[in-house]
Amino acid sequence: MTPETTNFVYVTYILSTPEKVFEAIIKPEIARIYWGHENVSDWKVGSEWRHIRANEKRDVQLVGKVIESAPPRRLVISWANESQKDDPSKTSRVTFDVEPQGEMVRLTVSHDELEAGGGMEKGVRRGWPLVLSSLKSFLETGRAIDVLAVPKSA
Amino acid sequence: MNDANPKADSVFKALGDPTRRALLDRLYERNGQTLGELCADLGMARQSATQHLEILQAANLVSTTKRGREKLHFINPVPLYEIYERWVRKFETQRLRLLHDLKKQLEGDGK
Image 1 (cartoon, each protein chain N blue to C red):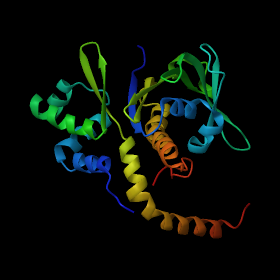
Image 2 (image 1 turned 135 degrees about the horizontal axis):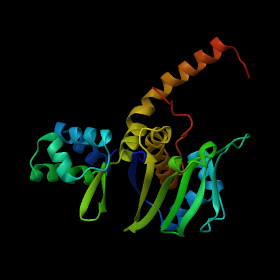
Image 3 (image 1 turned 180 degrees about the vertical axis):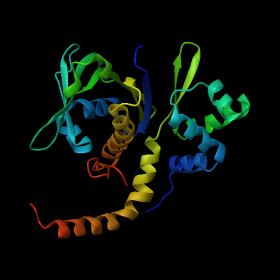
Image 4 (image 1 turned 90 degrees about the horizontal axis):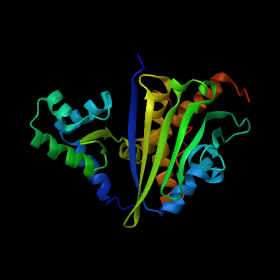
């Protein structure tokens, strides 16, 4: 029996340009401000990417491959905990779609092929809304949310 | 600060209805449902469910994707975080700071 998987779709509208939104995802010096992490890669299809905590220890927390890259509109990456990267059942997929809508940008993050009920699902459910609202706040006002300061359980 | 924010208005309006909150709860339990599944679950007519889902989508609390001929509905909590930031966390900050100071005192300055 193949394990059950689940998926999530998150959408946010940001007063910005597709280029700025795309850069905010792939440029470490921007991501560290609103995400507390850097996404590091050359962003070529087939390359590895790493999600690195932006502190002194620089833990590599997530890794994956670039599956599709069409800046500034679309980026598809695989996504796994560093410690579980060799287990295909623990590897999921994230798609960023960036569409201009008038003066706004519609950013859709689809997280697919997640193991249902697993730790990653739990992290993703809590993490994406926070990261996306921090990104929106940062691009619109210059102020990010300190995503690492929000209590894990109230 | 002027708080005229049409987007926040649409979120509060969307949440101000028990049927729409029930729809969000159902999607929280199981994400990516079709209109038919949501109707069956809540014992609702399609037309009524469609209207409520439209209001939720307009507030960006529900997003949809197509899978073949079916449309799947996903809960999108991003706007709730924006409201949390604006209307909850701001008022919590002082309390959290006091707790933080207390924790530091009790644990000693371990740094």
